[in-house]
Length: 201
Length: 149
Image (spheres, rainbow over the protein chains, first blue to last red):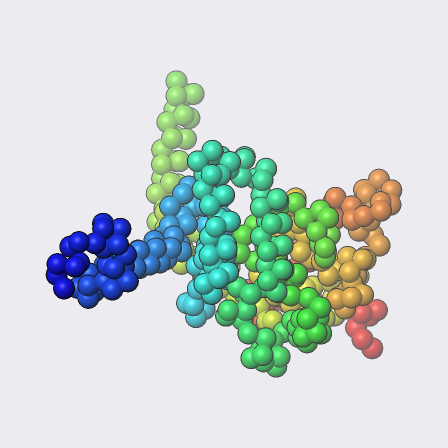
């Protein structure tokens, strides 16, 4: 048997090896693939989660000096029960597919950082409205998905809400005609010039 | 010489007066007495009830009081949260009291198409109410027209 094998050509031998690979080689390749998979996937997700923290967000002065300072005065940062939301809770979707889509879009923001798009207070204020409009649009399109991660309409107790809240929540919100962000703009950050925004004077 | 004596007396008197004032121990106000160089402990924040019935007015031309919480309601150059409900465009939908006609007039009596700038900052006159105890006794009575009789 051994003699016949050696007599065959180089290509034929490789062909035979591919058809019937040695079990050890198979094992090694599988094991390496598995380990590489774990390392890459784990590393990718770890890196992804690292960028998904408030510390990372306010690592840039653009976020820390502007939106974060305003946010600290609002109810989602400081309140009676001490439950709070961090930047990604509202600005990054929770489920994987939508998160990846948003993260890829956010790579544009890295370019903005590198080119200094909003690196001064004046520049930030100049662009505040377009950035706010974009984020409101995103929230409206997703039916305020990130709000609803915590605020579930199904479990709202109208008897615990104020009169004004009930009158809006039991009608426009219940029917799906409006979504959270339609009314709750400017609850976490200062507002831009609201001229031309629906519902604002 | 007489002048010098007067000056000396004045300086001496002011020194004495100075010690006398510091001896009395500071500032007296309706909120108690505190030494001038100390910062007084602040009172607890007053809680404002979430929603209540509208308040009766106590005198003619009193700016109506706000019967709800206004935490986070910003009124500035960019936006006016009050007008989201109380403006003439929005009051019917929101069921809020509409702002008065007078708020469209400038101080020269010219009526504008929108809220006059001098009336824009709502909470200069309209304020929410907490259940705070009055600092001094008050025997104020409303005029007959508002007495509800």
